[in-house]
Image (tube, rainbow, N blue to C red):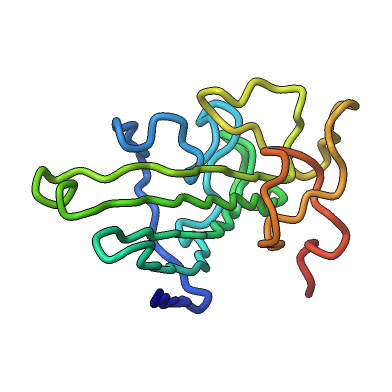
Length: 169
């Protein structure tokens, strides 16, 4: 069965200054965190990802999008020279559709998962993500060593960033 993969290089995209909540993004898993705790320090969001298409049979296509977003954040209302923190969100989604799905304009969500960090797992991430900003420490009880760049398996949504995933430079 044929398979093809497209890989994007690291790029950036501009963020809206007023994020909108839509039916397509109900939990902001690939968007900025709760506005009352953090704001973008830079409107350039770094994005890297892959898009893979697999023909599972002669009438069905499965598409997987695996994307990493890196946000530069500072506390909401902080001065422009306040310390900036990097917050990383990885989202993988797999969709499947066949000829009937195309005819009626729909697709099937097969799997979806997200990772984010650094983030305290003690916070409720149902509606918003809660990043740990410069100087903050995670409460105990969450997984350590989250690496959103590792693509071998799904892991916890939140956790402290693994040593190998720390920013360099």
